[in-house]
Image 1 (cartoon, rainbow, N blue to C red):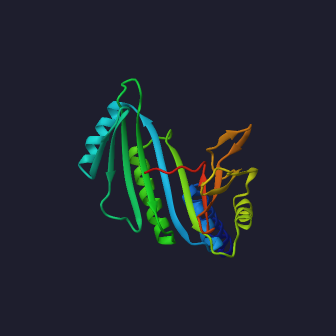
Image 2 (cartoon, one colour; image 1 turned 120 degrees about the horizontal axis):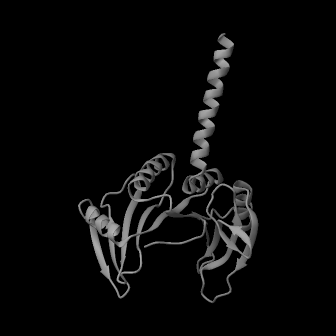
Image 3 (cartoon, helix red, strand yellow; image 1 turned 30 degrees about the horizontal axis):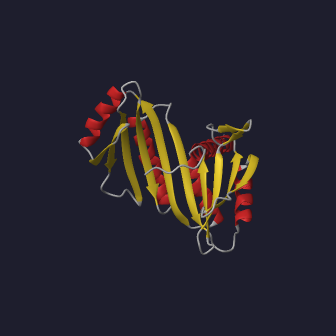
Length: 238
């Protein structure tokens, strides 16, 4: 009887551990952060964008709600009215910013954007990030929201770009890989690498192949390299 109970608790423990790990791996930022920690590379910065198109009426109500909780900036141009809301207090080395974009043309939809970003990554930041992101998604977004994630790592002068890409291929089990070299004068992007992983559902189709991971090798005037990895593609929101 004791042995059966012991086996039962071991099974339950393994099940819960596996489930928890699977849930974490399904979050792009957590997976990229775990990759950085495993490769022992310093995090320069990270950013998670969550976007969704919503009705203008819903967006206007959201603007009034956010005004009660955050300081904001209002920008107007020919095509839109942008409200930028920012939490004035850092949340465990993490900034959170919201944008609501109202179109001037009434037939178009509005857009809500949540931006989470930071300049470091650790187990403590990861736990805060998961809690904060889940709260934001629950309050502001539906299943139609799209998420874009990027992480920039500092080159340690030991791992060159080819080695870094190979580590990424093995870690994320990347397939359908392609590499593009940037020949534009004064461009800081030396080359871009694309691939597909089964870890995440979202992807883009390029030349009849799925793509949901992009790595940019960025080089400054002194020849120093940084590696930026993002999913499903690299975007930056300011």
